[in-house]
Length: 416
Image 1 (cartoon, one colour):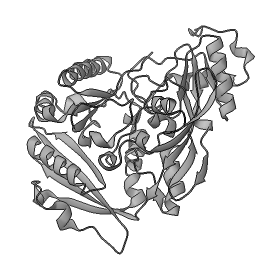
Image 2 (image 1 turned 90 degrees about the vertical axis):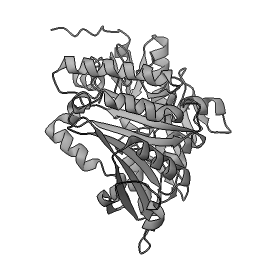
Image 3 (image 1 turned 180 degrees about the horizontal axis):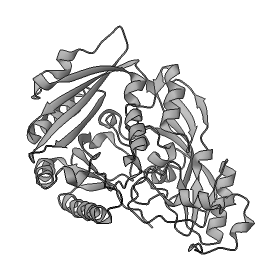
């Protein structure tokens, strides 16, 4: 069967581009697998900023869509370049300079690489994504949120400087004081204003260990109230929460609070847990190394890859709820959801974010002092387009419901 992707005569004139079938097939897909694979005309594999400048000038001259991608962990086709050029950033993955308070890295480097390089020096980025094998450029293009955001903001709020290539092929360095408009447009800008090539990231001192408390709740209101308390008082370095569906149609909740420490010191458990209304008899507490906690998803992901669910469709939804509407909205949404609606390996995440900690202009938040991240990380069954379509339609309905309360979308469908 002939390739349905139209051929572009100028492609063969550019030695940075490949039209190899395997490369096109790989670039056409993403982690979400919620859209039809969209093959690009070509894949570019730059190894320098000059390469990226040349590719962008070529794409502009020939009116071709150009989309950067690395780990392709997008969930709605954001990394696809249909009938355009997929810019594979994985060849730009060098970690350049590390000092006490900053590290300079290429955009294709993964956060796991950065942590491996900085931790032996006693430092780490203040905000790390739950899954570390994402690229720096990828998360900086959307924001980068985690359980450390209640103390340190988004990953984009911890960027000191960016080197980028603008759509016309111009190389530019920007920061809060140098070309600040471009700096603000690139962070969380979803790649619309240029390609991030290199980033200077803030580092903070890292502890050696982490004590991970899991607090359990039967009631949504109590769960949310304790999360607000923990966020406001800053008791934990890392604060997240989950909602878990039960077989009888109800939901239970848990707060994951993590305190970092360096032996022989240890966290003051009484101070961390006093006044909370959790089911104390169900409390779990575990000590891990700092690296072990930050890389806690590695084994789960390896298992999902082996068993297959990692390759299944992931119709994820990530929203911000305004605090005043959080309890009612969550109660309404969760009452209509069950295990079959999120999938066997699906997860529902809920945790508070103080608006004052986030300064990235491109990331929209509700106009309330506190917002709640609400993520339904669904896992659709393979080879069941009806189930996938139902989940996607439900996501759109929920998105409209949340936006009607003053909520916002953190990660949505791509802007084309």
